[in-house]
Length: 115
Length: 112
Image 1: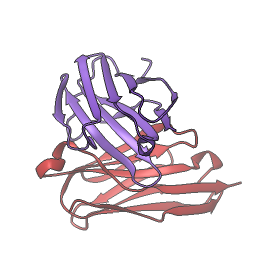
Image 2: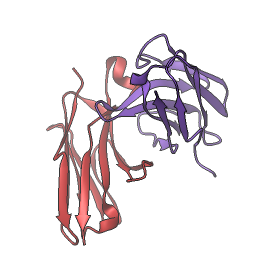
Image 3: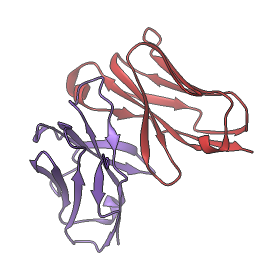
C-alpha cells in the first residue's frame, strides 16, 4: 500500500487567498484525522472523520477552516481566507476503525506558508 | 484539564547509551501512543499501549496506569535514532475521547 497520500507537499500563498489541502487515506481505513503542527503549539487535532462523517471538529480553529470527506478515499481541508498565523505543517492520518487501540498512520504532511 | 507532559525536552546521548524518555498525563486514559518524527518531518507510530509493556527491537515502552506515567526506552542507541519522540494520549472521558492529545516532544540527538 502507498500509505496516506497528501498533496501538495509544500504550499506558499499570500494572505487572503484560499488554500485547499488534500488527503487520500489508506484503502480500507474508516477513520481520518487532520492535524496541525507548529513550533509553538506542537501537534493538534483539527477534525476527525469516521465513515466519512465528521465526528469531532472541536479543534478547528475558526470558521475560516472547513473540512470535507465526500467519499472513503478523499478528504480536503480548506482555509479561506488564509492568514500568516495559519502557517504550519498539516498532517492527515488514517486508522482502521478510529478505536482507542487503533494505530494511526500519518501522511508526509503539507508545509503551508502564508505570506 | 487534560494535559500531557514530556521530559526531557532535549536529550543528547553518545552512541550505545541507554535512553529513557518520560511522559506523564493528568487524568485517566484509554490508550497512549509513542510516535517518532524524523528530521525530515515524517511521523511514524511506534507503540500503542493501554497497559504493561511492549518491545520492538531496541525500543521498549512501558506504562503505569496508577501513576499516570509512561516511559520509552532505547537500548544501544544509534545515530539513526535521532528524532523527536512524541507521546500522545487518548483520555477516557468527555470531549477528549476521540482525540489524541500530544506532548510537546523530546528531541533526541545520538552522537557517534
